[in-house]
Amino acid sequence: MTMFTGNSDLGVVMQFSKLVRLAQGLLWLGVLAASASAAAAAAKPATTAAAQRARSWSPPVHVVVVIEENKSFATIIGSADAPYINELASQGLLFIDAHAVMHPSGPNYVALFSGSNQGLTDDSCPHDLSGPNLASELLAKRLSFAIYSENLPAVGYAGCSGSGGLYRRKHNPVVDWQAAGLPAALNQPFRNFPRDYSKLPTVAFVIPNMMDDMHDGTIAEGDAWLGAHMSKYVRWAKKHNSLLIITWDESDARSMTNQIPLIVVGARVKPGRTGQYVAHYSVLRTIEDFYGLKPLGLSANTKPAALFP
Image (cartoon, rainbow, N blue to C red; front, side):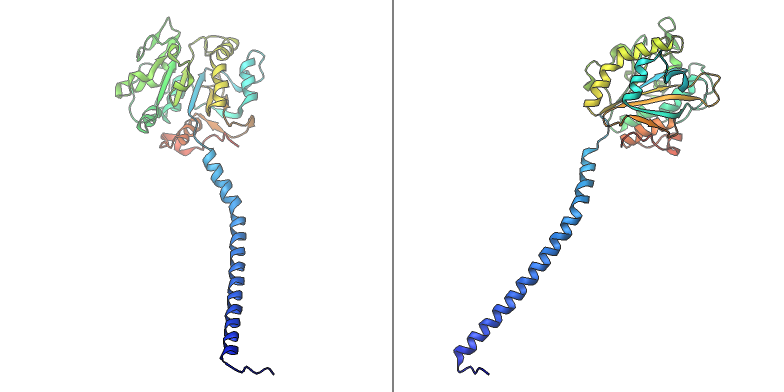
């Protein structure tokens, strides 16, 4: 046994003991730091991925909705008379179980705009309606809306027909709310559709005339009109976080299922086909959800269209 002979030996022992305790403490700190680092590393990928998804998604800057007339899904999809529409169907998302609300035309436009047919059952004109609608909800959020109707005689025009019957109010739901205070400036002729697409409103409805919407004209004429007037916007939309939605007001008047084509093309839309059941209320709900709007009418009871991966 070693004997310590003085205070100097005792001091050495005490210093050695302190060094041992210090080393033990540093060792535990190292273990704790390593554990914390490992836990952080394990959690980091999920947190970062979620944050990246949240940062990468933003609502479309612009949505353009074109409404065509009185054609069934089977009449349009695969038709040699509609090459441009079928090209868009291959570029974007095609809904194979899309439906109008009812027959005839007028109530469908009103339903798409307000979440209800507002009690309308025919194409009679005029009707002055009140209550919330897509335009009023967007304006309340300091966003913008306009409808662009081909051959509308003038901004804010409220007549039932114009331009020799090429324009019909029954296809323009916006004007039905003008008497209740919806700004007449939202009711625009298609000639005022911006050529600089960055100046488009947040949401725009586009209504071709009675020939170009396939109501009185042919499928080929309507298809050519879309190619001439929407192809540049489609190319632009894909690069500028924007969308084009092409729908039909209803199928042909004899159809019991009222199945219609519905095509969405633009930024972040994965090309393909989807069997999700959708109706006009689903399209309205999709737009409402984009911009945090309160769902209108029956759109509150439906799911939005699933557009993005």
